Image (cartoon, rainbow, N blue to C red; front, side, top):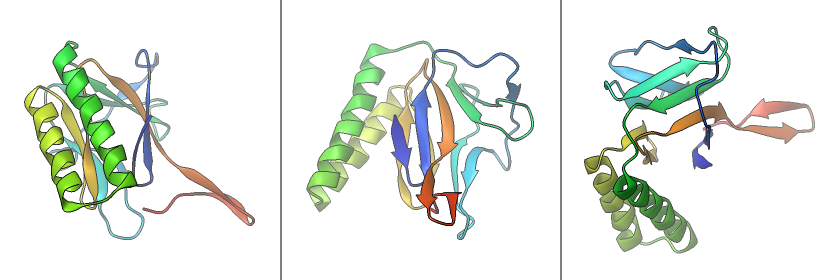
Length: 148
């Protein structure tokens, strides 16, 4: 499971039956819009990345990287997640640069990046299928989406 602000990506084994393709908007496949800033969690439109709506109208979104699995890219993506955890535990300019460098390396090996204007990119390895969800939080008045 991977998190970018208020969005969570959870690995899946396959695209659910009946999922409907989502068209790009201004050259981007948009997973979620920010509630306040107008920013968005999105992928650059590319032949190797597909997005689907699970129910065809507004349910869960599924991301599929169409490429064949590349073990070196899987390892590069894992190195990004490890570097991000290290930064979270001990922030420094060097740790920040390490995350950025490893992300660029994963993308160079074929990963596609989930991008956001205020968060680090999350590389998605070839062959991956993920469900994208907006996190929810409990509040005494109601269960609500986490604000980004």
